[in-house]
Image 1 (cartoon, rainbow, N blue to C red):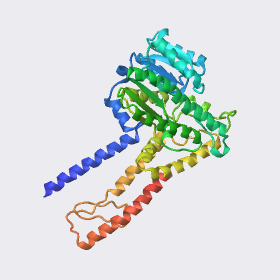
Image 2 (image 1 turned 120 degrees about the vertical axis):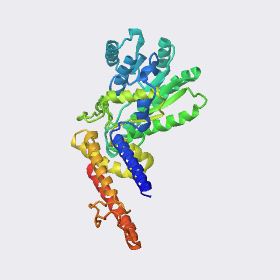
Image 3 (image 1 turned 90 degrees about the vertical axis):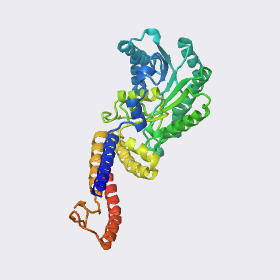
Length: 409
């Protein structure tokens, strides 16, 4: 009997330890668990993308620019597009410096996603130069920083034209080529805002939700082509120039102060995880630090909690915006994750009280006492313990809610 109890204790302790380790890993994560598993154990971009023809839109800055550099180092053949040709030439020059690619391995192709009549010709130009397109990376787009009540409807039309219609228009022409070859990858850089809702980005969220719905539906239409992959990348806040080119309340106005970007995920890390997703055909990848990564999970599995948390985060986001600092400045991963981890560990300790023989109860719980090993419980004490546990469960839930709320205030 004693050996059986000891074995149960060891197993329970091992399970709790494993759970704690996974919790700590999750609190330090910067991507969803499937993606991080693929990074550790899956296919390597160095093997999967070398020699592939990759067309990257929005390649003149931000995530697209960093993707271009990393692809060049991997040995991929590149078609790079954006509106500013001089910036594309700058990116090409650096690619040639950091890789073994030649001039002919990189095609600079000016492209305006809102000029949909030019997309077929652009696709034909890439095909003429390389003969094929293995991977299309839909990265072009613009974000938004404005409240709906202050924003002209022309802004919403422009966001949809660029982020949504421009993307699916180019995809249509490239997909026709991939269907003929019966293989290829279409990668779309969406956003965590395509999963959740957030203030100051109503139009941007709408465009990213539209992309999520479109490509999820498109994937189901391509079941006869198992070697054509539809991959959606959902980054959170990233260090990039996208904030300097956001839509505001009217088309003629730009953002006056983009704020400090150092607290956001480094662009090279986001690009690396994107390439891991492409190499392993991860259908949807969440690439973000906390708290946005946590909100993605909540939105998926506990939407009521997600609404509550986003309402609190959203209030601070609007306050930051009106104060002239970066809207996401108060969500630094290092500070928030460590505080959240400490509070969760404290909560775990308070919850680990037990009413069985041989266990000492935590004195931090109101009304508990130390019980000597071997002390027996009568029916009255058993009922009292059950009632006490029910009462304390209400207390500890309120306490945990208050502690987590304080972290985000």
